[in-house]
Image (tube, rainbow, N blue to C red; front, side, top):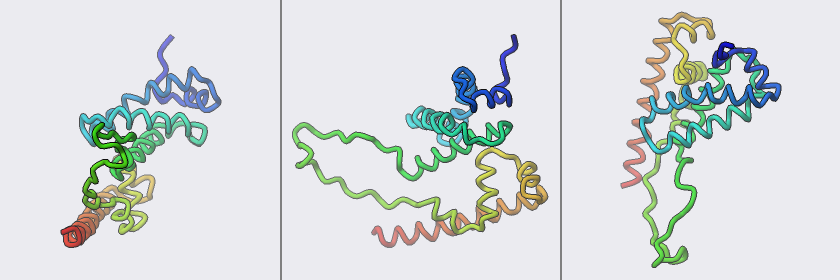
Length: 185
C-alpha cells in the first residue's frame, strides 16, 4: 500500500471528520514543512521547537475550520506566520521567573525597563489593505504568479506593489526608530 501524500485531500477530509489516525498522519507530514518555515526565518534558535509545537497545536485545533482541503499547506503556513508574529511581539519570553535565592521575589533586583520595541503590526497598518494582503501572501510562501492570479493582476504589478510596500514599511519603521531613540535617550 502506498503512503498517502502529505496533503492528500481524502486524508485531510478524514482528519476533519475526526479520524485520529488521519490527524496524526497529517500533523506528522506537516511538521517538517513548518519546521523548515521557522528555520528559514529565524535560524537555529531554541524557540524553533516551541514555535513548531504551538503551530501544530493551532493546526490540529483549527482543522475543522478548514473549508477547502486543497489549501491545507496555506492554512498550516498561516498558522506558522501567526506564531512567528507572536514571537516578534515578545510573547515567547520565559514563562517562569527565576530568582536569586539570596533575594526573594519581594527583594528581587529591579531590572531596567527594556528598550521599546518596534511594533511591526502598527507599521503594517500604514500599508493599503491590498499591499498588506500581498505581503502576507508572499510571507506565507505564495509565488508572485499565484498572487497575481488570486488578486486578478499581473505578476509585474504584484512585484511592483511588493517593492513599494517594502519602501513604505522602511520609511515608517525608520520614522518610528528615530522617534523612539529621541524619547528613549
